[in-house]
Image (cartoon, rainbow, N blue to C red; front, side, top):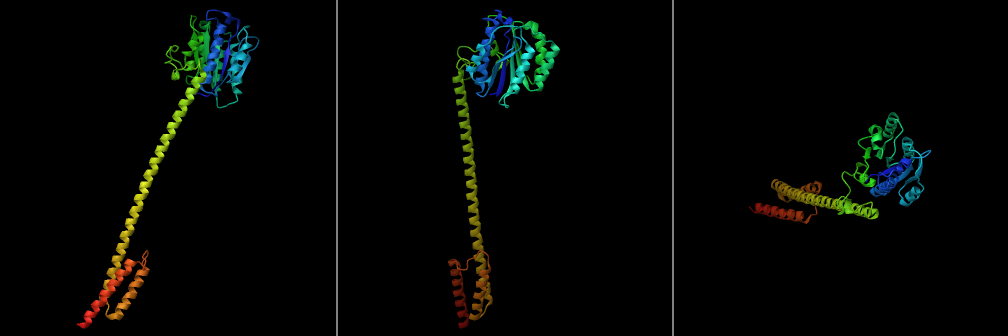
Length: 334
């Protein structure tokens, strides 16, 4: 959804009384303005639309930028057909309206109707188009009624203003078709084919946003909420998987540490037993055994991480001492 501020410029000159478009050029524009307002505000609730009448002694701002359809209808009610259109001045006023928009994050767009011959020379229009491009303003021109007369000037104007295909020229020849239907099928509103059929297959969710904008908006918001819920669930599943993997790694590390400690303890005990046996084999008599006991006790106390009061260690030392004493007595008898 594009966040955008749009100014619509109506050609309400005397030329718009012509009835070569249904029902006439003026009423066709009014219907198209209502359609474009609904499209823009339905696309994003924060979009705003303004309306300018280009004919008369000076183009007039009928509706300032708003998202309220009631404000649009009240402003359009004051519109009347009179005078000659001032195409270039209307665009310059629209640019000023966009410059003072409240939300500076909104992109800027002008949609201008041209239902009468344009008196401005091509050089001036090209200069105006370059100015719009420089200021980041996109412009769409809907040329009808006098489209053959204005085609060369408007083509040069759009080419000068176009930036990455953000500006368009729509020329609509006379016929029994409705102006808003031709706009619906144009790149101005993102269309590329004719109006949707009765099954609603060409509309998002199968609902025409022009016929029921509130329902279309509600469906779009519901879809966005569902997508957000699915993203949260996916993120939660990924987080749970990561925590489980980290827990298993931590548990495995703890088990490995415990096994290493057990091995070290066993190695220490074995080293003590061997040291004790060596000392007893070298010692003579009970005095020597006592000295050996003191030596072993001192050795045990100096080993890091060894508890000299460990019952298993005391039992091992006691059994070894008794065995040594028995061996000593046997030697004395002999």
